[in-house]
Image 1 (spheres, one colour):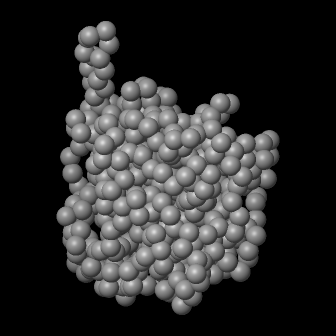
Image 2 (spheres, rainbow over the protein chains, first blue to last red; image 1 turned 30 degrees about the vertical axis):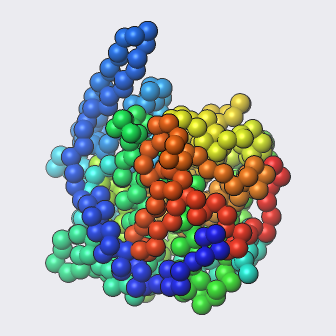
Image 3 (tube, chains in turn cyan, orange; image 1 turned 180 degrees about the vertical axis):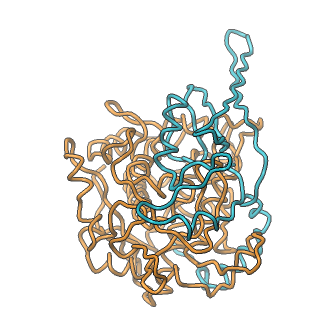
Length: 133
Length: 336
């Protein structure tokens, strides 16, 4: 920018070279453990406040395990829904249900499929990697 | 000479070229990057398209937390969102995407179009859903899969125009690979938090009410233009999500999750966001906060912190991204 751009900045070679150069960042695509606790801290009249919140969420018996945070304002932020915050956990989970292309994987159950399409070509062929952050 | 970015709803030829460019990037495997390169273990590596490499970059960036100098990150700021870097990071992303579109279209003058999503107050919600953008002759409408328009899906690979291969799983947050591809998911206007798109009054309010780009704590609770445009706070008379965030929520489906660049409307939304930032800077000056002296400024969000990407080895700082007038302009800017 500022009127200067290196020649060849947007080429197939650059696409390959960038992935190689920042290979360490690709770990973000892999499964990782994240805390199920959300910690809020504040200082008030010289007193230190610390609130630890843990949510255990299930839908149709299946756990919902994406990273979530309770903000200082008391809203919930679910990392996999990056553009919204929620005033209640129930509203947050309703939105997960709205956005998810497939239903939850209940113990011993199956994923849902496309509207009006069979599940077979997609639901069983997923490769799951990475965490919510 | 600077290229011109145009209003997609006013320029059918640009819409067609945009769609053509997107589908060519979806079919561009010339980088040689595969799922194995990305660390997926499978019996046979699958090539990753140039288009999908941007999806992956966006997901990776939003999974890089950016705490403050005390190690705190109470509002989940990350390397691309919920913080000051939001606007320059996406400006960098869009510029690189635009350059790749120029490459596959063999048109160095092609400008990424924007979607001016603001509606007049009290515009009926069904009028918004039935806008020309969401028709067969636009970019298609709701569905799972979306079947109309240039990004429609077909079970027949010979008939297929567009497919999603990498998406975030809502139940686990995991990055998921669909080897056979699936169709795009859109649910226009179905979010209870965002039944309607932003209004022109809300845009004007954002442009006119803020004289500072950003402020401590440089996150989703901050005052300043950036946070108002990103949409974590709103002006009087409305509730979050606002502006940019509201558009994501309103489109729904794939636009509602961390792999939102899967829906090409992502670029149209962000191009309008960039356009609004440009209008604000022309009026307020090409300034940015925080810099390295700003209290509590997190690394990766400061004026001279490098932005890295998974699509080029070139880096840029916010300082490099404030003045792009030599590279591109907009056919029309809102009044500030």
